[in-house]
Image 1 (cartoon, rainbow, N blue to C red):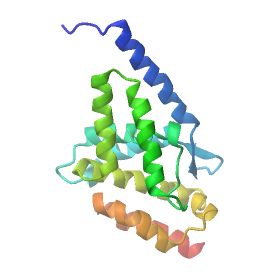
Image 2 (image 1 turned 180 degrees about the horizontal axis):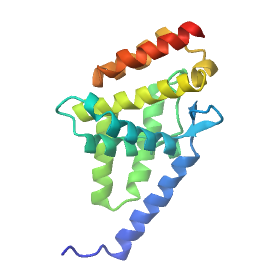
Image 3 (image 1 turned 30 degrees about the vertical axis):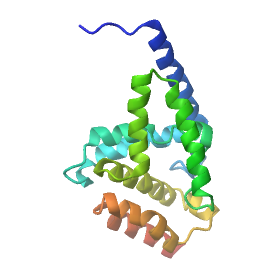
Image 4 (image 1 turned 120 degrees about the vertical axis):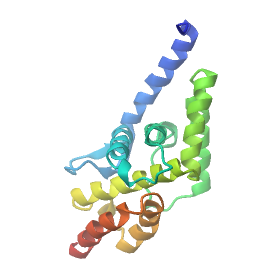
Length: 197
């Protein structure tokens, strides 16, 4: 039988969990399906884990969906401090990366050292997008907002004057890299939307 964690460890675990709840207050550019309000980053992270579970058959044979789900539930935690940066706005990627690294230092630092290091490593792997798991996770992260925007009458595409060519280059390439079977299906839906818009 494993010994129960001591009160100090539990206090750090609960401190992290309470801080993570703030992700629900970070609003994204993409609306919820009804288009009634912006999606928050907590909802987005949950929805992506469901996407990964349901679309696991679109992953390559070397992809471990349990690891993808871990990445997706953690990937936007840094937005608690760094905020959400919509993909279709001009921004300084180096400045954004620095804000996110500082946020990761603080947030994962709330946890006991062993657990913080483990979760930080998963987050770093997602950010690097080099392993098969991370490449698939990035694809899922890009495909969900496309379908949300279609379902809500354009959503953030309208707000940011996004063109189909921009969508293809900024999103399509990343989706196709990790989930090549998904992009043609999603691309056709997006193209039909832009052609009709």
